[in-house]
Image (cartoon, rainbow, N blue to C red; front, side, top):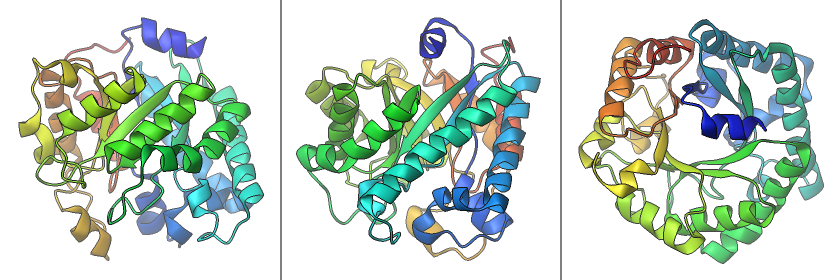
Length: 314
C-alpha cells in the first residue's frame, strides 16, 4: 500500500545522510566492519540511531517531503557474519531487529503529509572501496538471498542495494528480491571518472542488469560519489538515464581511495551539495529520492531539501 502511494504520487522523498561516517567521526563509535547494525545491541546505540534518524524525518516533515527510512543493515549480510564474529543465525536476527527498530520509529513519526517507507539496506559482499574480487550473478544470488528473505519477512517495503561495484552482483540481488516479489532498488557507486569501480560505464551496467532481469529494479540510484564525478556522463535524453530515480551523493570530492585512508572527515560544503544535487534534476528528470552518503549529515540533506526547484513542497 505505501509503495503504491510512492509510485503513484509526484511527492519528493528524502533519505538520510552518511550514517556510518557520522557515527564514526561525529559520535566516536568504532564500528567493526563499518557496521552500524552493532548499535542495536546497546541502549545508548539505539538512542543514538533514533536521534539520528529523527533529525532527518523532521527535515522531511518541515519541507513537505516523504522519507525513505533505512534499516541499518548495509553490513548485515551473510558475507559479513564471519568478519563480525557472528553466526548466520545471529546476523539474520540482526536484520529482523533492525526492521523492528525502524518500524517503531515510523509508527511514532509518520504523518499523512510525511509518508515513510521502510527500506531494507543490502551492501556488497566485498569492500565497496576496494572491489578486487567480482562475483557472478549466481554467487550473488546465493550470498544475498538469506538477508533479503529475512528483511522481507520482517516487513520492509522495499530493498535497496547500495554501493554496488559491478553489474553481476546487482543481477543476483535483483533475482533474490524477485523470488519473494519484493521491490528492489540498485545503487551503483562511481569513481571520479564516472565509471563503476569495475571500469564499466554506468549506462552499460544499467543495460546489463535490465536485460538480465527483465527491467527488474524499481529504479536505479547513484551513491557514494560527488556530483562532479558523474554529472558529465549523464545523458538527459537517453532511456537509461530515465531509469535513475535517486542520488545519494558524497559531500567530498575525494576519490574512494582517499576517503578510505582519511583520518579526518571531509564534509564538503552543505550548501554547494544542495545546489549540485538540485542541478542533477536537469540531467535526471525521473529523480524521486535525494539524500547523502559519506561525509553528509542533516545539514547537507536540509540544503538538498531546500534546493529542489522542480517540485514544490507538498
